[in-house]
Image (cartoon, rainbow, N blue to C red; front, side, top):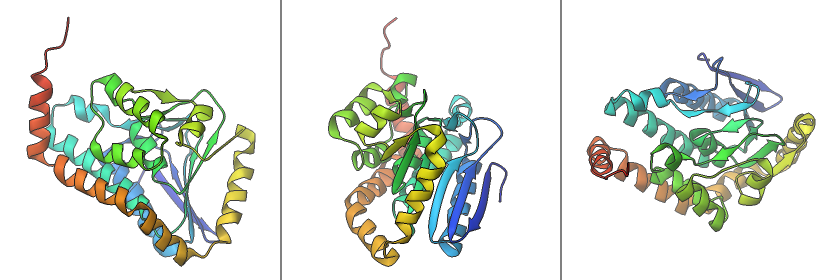
Length: 246
């Protein structure tokens, strides 16, 4: 497996761990490595766990250095890779458990939102869509993904105001499904795996597709509409034409 992502299967459970040695930045290569791990999981496992091996961080999100470089093609490639991966996780045939034990900045949050079960550990770490706080409008694929999981008032606050939430509020918002003390995360994960073993997996895959089809269709339309070079260039021109108050 590529540097930054580890993969192992034990008793039917694929464990995909993120560890780039820093803050798990979602570069194009990192996203490709995660996608390759899910390729293997689809063939070799029955349940998938996505987790960070870095203390205090799930992911710092997209690689901001790529955005800052001014290379539109590379920026677009990275964002589109993230969008396609999130969309793929939404329809993964196996149950997917995401584990949040540290900060999950936007692309990290997108991956967790696409998981079937989201476990969180109590702590002073945050997740959400903070793009507007750093001068970026959240992409529509991400808004559609978040819309499918978050309660409306919390969705509006994170999308339009850039609010980020610690685990307790993230649970209320719909970003997480369960929050436990850090020392209990492994036992909670084991309980979740045991519960998922009891479901009928083919029925799970069909139900997931039926439930999420409207959201996935909206995500696909948003990707095809916005994540093209022409649309990206037009968005940049529109943003640069806005007068920023001094």
